[in-house]
Length: 485
Image (cartoon, rainbow, N blue to C red):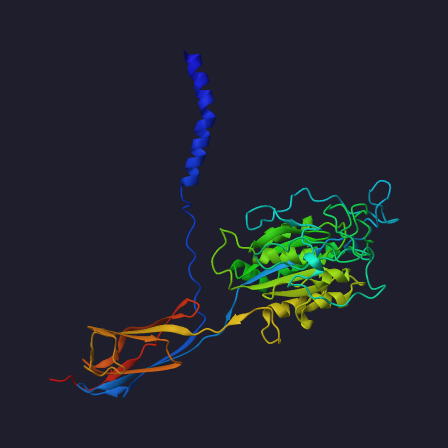
């Protein structure tokens, strides 16, 4: 009997453990606290005077309070995606091509190949349905009839000899689909161009028989330089401050012949830095698929996303050597997104990097940390990265509580107070002007240096729903002479 009881207890133990775990999930997290609203940046000037400042017992004096304020424009929070080229041209001594017989990559003579990929799996990107999302060749084809999507810029054909190896004879790529919408339906390829292959191991646009790794490797390890640059950016004091306050969120996307979301938007700088090791080089350059993945990362909405997503600045920072096929440059990102480019390497194609930058001054190099930080922090440049919104006070409340030995002259407050309760007065100003003046008359009771108020101050809210408050300076009135009989 005892043995049967023990066996029953052992069999029930996993069930009890599971039920206990489920119960723990239902317990609220005690350490989670609501986030307090940000404080208003509006600056107030408060002055309070009494005239005359010296009176005889029984005399009256007038108190004048003046309120001025200015509100700086609100800097919208920013979402920034680092879009890093991890194609073969960004590597040093990686595969120059593939052996036609084996399909295995060959090595540059005398140069070491890239180390094996990091064992940490990439963060699975999610689409609107919560499914993993990777953009690969053939996922978005030209619209039927050879037309173009609304996001395409027809552009002029490339000049002979201006294209990197592997671009000749490849099929045209498509543009970015409408934000949050479905990709452009598949259709027939453009006349005279081969149909892109959906096989990730093959050359996009050249058919399934051509290996993907036929893009020549370079002489510099540009991926390593990209990792170092992003780490340095994260360590900048202004960036650290904005990450800590969640005013900045960073994401990481890589691209070669596909775009891959490595880190979704996050204010955890360490999380981004720790996953930079996932940037490993191989394959061919498809800037169009990279931009599309970065765009989706910025514009996607998920059920658990916080509110206020529309009120953010969105930026893609492209790190690449610019070895793009001209056909892939026809892609245009959503107009709500700014594109900054960081040209990597001595042989970078600066013209093509400038072509995808939103502004001329947004075309930088991988050595231009100061210039990038200038765009990030300085509002004096004609096209700063931050976006601003005008701010104004939407409501201001003035409260003044007179001291016990100060008597208010009835009917004297101008403008009339909203409420008067004993020694307490309150005024409410919806949409206050830049300068407000309030006066009232008093009759001191007693002699000596008497404080007029036990406390006086203002509270307000601005157009960003942020609260603010400030106090008036303390003011005394001198009462000289014997007290009234």
